[in-house]
Length: 217
Image (cartoon, rainbow, N blue to C red; front, side, top):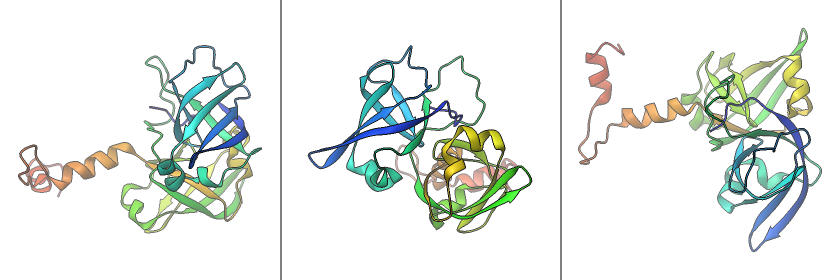
């Protein structure tokens, strides 16, 4: 699990084909790897990757075809800047929201406009994800925990403050750029609960149950 608070901007050093998928070498810049071990998880642009090789200044991870198909990793190049975050520890402040590093879909920058010292972005998203995105709710964009300003059936907007523009790759994002999107994990599990399938395969009408309990009207 992650928080969506970016710890460093790294750089893709190498991309090596590996019998149909790829192996990635990432230079970690200022990311603290003092307590990292082989097998640990590190989020790269919001994608949870497993460390298979490690040094003080870089790590190596394999990327499967599933990840290549579902994220922007298929388009990444040597020299690209990436957002990095080590996995959440029990004593870590939860400054963002609970992020799994499992990307739900790929979005696109539709607009970028100045808004005082901030920048207002409008992102397009797959229509199937819109039901998980709520005004003033949380969303993860390229590994960054952000608050949704407005949302409709195929897009949403966020305001990015100067600190986030400086400390993440969003400062370089322009109209047309693709980004990884992860919706709030609570929304995903709530939908599964509302589908109403019990352990014995009998249908459970949780919507009616929640209505009777006063949670929904």
